[in-house]
Amino acid sequence: MPNFDPPDPNFEARVRESFERQRVMETIGARLKRVEPGGVEIELPFRHDLTQQHGYLHAGIVTTVVDSACGYAAMSLTPPGAEIVSVEFKINLLSPATGDLLVARALVKRAGRNITVCAGDAFMSGGAQEEKLVATMLATMMTVRGRA
Image 1: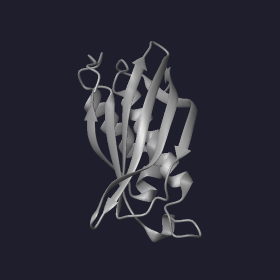
Image 2: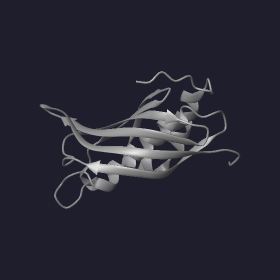
Image 3: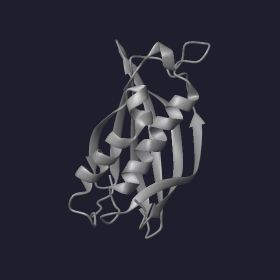
């Protein structure tokens, strides 16, 4: 992981507090597991009510979790009071999302004053199955200042 020096010494608390306010993460049952400068990990236990017609986690659910991981990785490197919004992302869905647990890991590739580029990967695991890469994302995040 790149070695970043976060401008906010309380970045982890700020990221975790923001995650707790994100109702979609609560609705789908996602958990913020790890927060480091420029890196975040989010877990989502498999749920049948989040699947598509073939029984895989829906692509929209996978995308939502990886997008949030990228956003919070970017937020970990913003100054106090700043927020992050997604402005663009590209996701490649590589394999059906089947298993017991989705894990999204995101890392900042480049942190700028206004724009941060992140890469995120989603893995499924469970039972005897080792982690299987199911999606990869490249995301552009914008830093927003001065908004409540």
